[in-house]
Length: 191
Length: 327
Image (cartoon, rainbow over all chains, first blue to last red):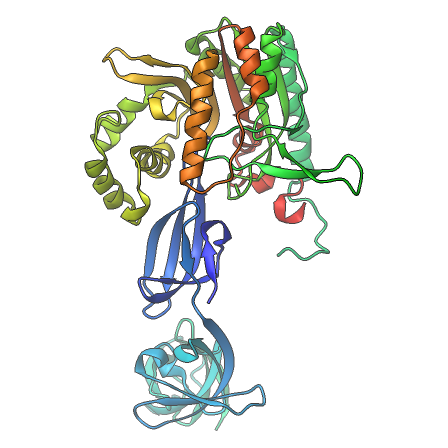
């Protein structure tokens, strides 16, 4: 794997720190006109999402992390693993564990495309599309015609997610959800 | 980001006009004070030996098939200007490009504009007065109070509770690791620890303009070293810091050829230990100092950064036509 010197640091570079793969979020080069230069770096740990701040002396090197991302189709879950298939024509399948699936767990839908991040070819995180359409599994009966009062009620989607929805929504409706906020956008169609 | 078709400048057209106006104001300042504008080479046979500065080298050939001679783009025009001083030039200034390999960041571009001037007969205090007057003139400040002056020691005492001249390596290292999270194995000297603490904690907190003076003797570079009122050897050197950013660096200049030769040797030894390329001592500078250079104070000021302050930009790229990646 590549080794990177501080003067190659840039936003988005994937490196190893304390044994974990990290992505550089910010890199500030601090050097007095006379004296030793340093890099002040903010990194996101790709395994747990924590943000670290570290300082490196100019010329220090760290190992790169073997990180790749690919678009994959969600197939099914066996209860322990969540199975995805590459859509590049290889039909290669991978299995994500509970940690890797965490961010996408509420928004899983068969045949939908997800971005799977791989570290040394093993999945470490799954990012859902920004919008996903999911069917309502449970909610109070819809108040027909009530599209104006602005009230909301809880609904449970087939993926298991709980969202606040308008009062007119019924069981079986397909809703468009913004996965970044977890909020209802609109009603897509009747199932 | 660096696609080959990206041709537009980073600076706006208004910024180009502001730079031209700033340059004119700077030249006017020196003309009014009888300081002579000079030009010295950027392409030279020698370079400074400072182990923290990495010169850009150039492959010179007298004719296309000839053996390549390695020349250096200047990291500052200091040596050539000192030779002019020794030749009797009197007060001189130069505004031109300087080059520092690998220095790239929000406040650094490896090619930048440096304003450097020398004042025979000036003390460091007189030169700080003149830098202050120049900054007021350049930024068209009128009502601001006089700039504060504070010693390097005082800053460390006030902000970190340590005397930077007296603290020994182990407690200094522990403090530095605690404050910055740096890997302790890279902190091999007091100077490295002090540079890190200064650059990451002290300098960013200096928002109002302030002259920092009396640097540790090991950070003297080409400044004279004297004993301060506490008997501590300190470098007769100052930096002007504004908005947490170094703007200028001045010296009561070292005129002693033998001491200069010792500092070249010490730098080269440090380069050898750090496995950096050797840079030979500039014999022409030593000969000029041996001939005799008048006692003087000199300073280098970053013109791009001065323009950043004038326009209130966050990055140096905003005041450059074409930063490195687009040059």
